[in-house]
Length: 462
Image (tube, rainbow, N blue to C red; front, side, top):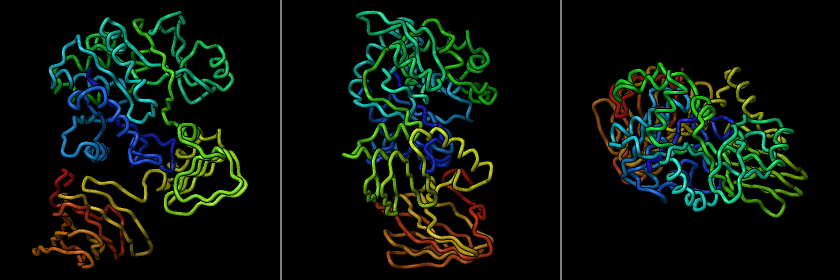
C-alpha cells in the first residue's frame, strides 16, 4: 500500500505557536518530534520509505525535507510539490498521478491518504487496522476511519454509520459538518456517530472513477500525461476531497477506532491530548503555578507564573502572548483574521524564520539597527548577495564560517568577527560538520528583509 501524507496546510488555529510561515505540522509539544515527524514514523512502522510520498508546497519544502532527514539522515524522501494550493482533492489527484507515473503503480493497487498533523495513540492499534482497510478497498470500497467520540466536540466533522453486530467495517449513512454544541451532544448520546478522522484508503482505479463521476473538472486535468497535469494544475477547482468525492460516493465504508485521536485543531484539543499533572494542568516550559487548575500553559524562554486561575489557555512566544478561556479557542482563527487585516507582523511571521540553509532569530530591532542570531546547517551556504542600505557585523559563536567579502575569502572561527560594508558582495558558508552559529548586527537607514540582491543561490532564489 502506498501512503500519501498531506503536509501543505497553513493552519493558524494554534496561533501564536503556529503561523503561516511555520504551521502546526512542524510543531512539537513537549518532546523532540513534530506532528509531521510522528506521522512519518507511524507509517514507517507499517511500510518501507519507498512507499511514502509527502505532498507539500515550495514554501514548506525545506522544512519538510529537514524534518524528514532528522529522522533518517541522508535519505532522499519522496517529496512532491504542488504547483499551487488547490485544496485536498487536486492535491490527492496529483499525488496519485505521480505514484502511477513515477512508481509504476497500477489501478488495482491501494493507497492511503493522511494529514501530517494528527495525534494518534496508540499507533499500533491504528496500524493493526490497515490490512483490513487495504483488503476492503481492494474489493471496491472507499474506506475511512472513524473515531468513537467521548465528548460533544464541535470542532470535528462526524460520520453517521449503520450499526450492525459482529462487524469490523460498516456502511456510511452520511457525513456531517462541524455541528453546534447541542447537535454534538445528540450525536454523542445516540451512539450512531463517529468523528471523521480524515484518513482515507482508495484503490487507484476506483479513485479515478469516482473523481471522474463526481468532480469531472478536476479529473479531466489528470486524463493526460503527468507533465500535462502539472502544467494545467492551476485550472483545478479549489475543492476538498470530502466535497469532491466522499460525500457523494455510494461505495464508501468506515472502520471505527477506539483510541485517542486528535486533529490538534485548537488549543482545547491540544490540552485534551497532552499529559496533565495532579491539578489537571498541562505545562510546557518554565512554569511556576500556585492554586492553578485545569489550565494549558505553554512557554518558550520567559518564566510564566500563575496564581489562583482556572480553565485558562496561556501560550507565550518571543513576540506574542495568547490568553483565552478554555472552550473559546476555536475563536483563535477569528483573532488571526483580525490581525492579518490590521497587517500585524506577528499574524504571519515568527521571530525565528526558517530558510533552506538553516534559520535566524531576531533578538532586537530598533531605528537603524537589527540584531540576529543566525544558524547555518552543516554543508549549507547563503546566497551570494549584497545590501544597498545596511552594513553587517558577524561574530562567530560556534563552529567555523567560510566568508566571502568582495574578492576575498577567509575562515572565521569562534570568538572572531568580520565586517561586511554596505553594497559589498558577500556570502556566508558552513564548511564544517556542526551547526554554525553567529550573531549578526545590521546597521543602516533600512534593515528590512527585502533589502537583498541575490547574485547566485543554491536554492533557485536568485
